[in-house]
Image 1 (cartoon, chains in turn green, cyan):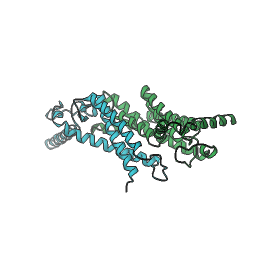
Image 2 (cartoon, one colour; image 1 turned 90 degrees about the vertical axis):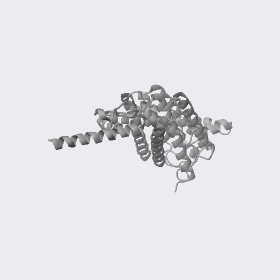
Image 3 (cartoon, each protein chain N blue to C red; image 1 turned 120 degrees about the vertical axis):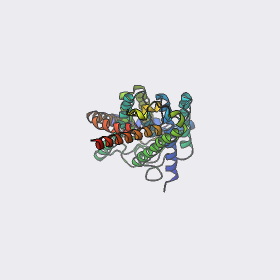
Image 4 (cartoon, chains in turn purple, orange; image 1 turned 45 degrees about the vertical axis):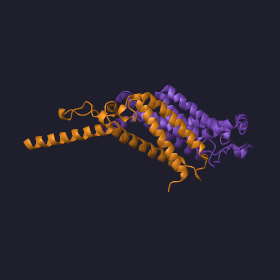
Length: 196
Length: 155
């Protein structure tokens, strides 16, 4: 366990050591690490899927992905909240001597909420659209990497968050699958007024 | 009162959502909700370009890494305003493209006098606009209602 913590700290220190070395890399990481870029891009993908499809049947399946993605984000936030009630881990910038390249969050470092949300949406999309889902996995991973680079998360926080995200996506997919008659009826009403 | 930070976020999401809808509609053949119906490929290219420019604009015009205890937005507020901006983009797209494509959308292939139910779902946007589709649905509902009342009167 202590060896994992040691590797965790070493990785944060190594990645964070790049802060300030390249203005271009810093600018890229400043956008990637933010609370807005990846969630907005991932949500835009879900919005785009709502309109995508060459037939009503295909569009319906895509709209189910949009719905499932929204539910998965809710589940991932709930899982992170429950986890935060059970454990608290200080942020790397509290424990280590690093260049904090972000504001100083006060909540638990483990599990990383951004990774949880990013991987939840990516997993839901990946189940139906492999390439688009893979692109979202890359985006979510870069978000996690940027968080470690900025000194606000340990790598294991990102891994923990990603696992919770995948679990949340699986739960949401299972729920929508079991209660498929609800979206079927709701979407039928939406189709009657041409918003689905 | 909306903060400048929040207004920037709303504008960014609204513009990006407009472009995402255009991209998806052009790719899916929903010509009736395109601003430039005759140029679907150009629509897709311009949409991607505007999304990228909007990202650059958002991150280069201010300090965006703010705590949600300060100027930043917490997850719930962010989700709420994303939904509002996205819905506004959908509404604007349906309304404006209905006006732009009004004449083209008249030839939607559904005859009100036929008594048939008009097509449902967005797939009909490959032949018509949102306003025409809604008008067809309302016309059919009125016709069905009057036919039903005539039957009751005759009975």
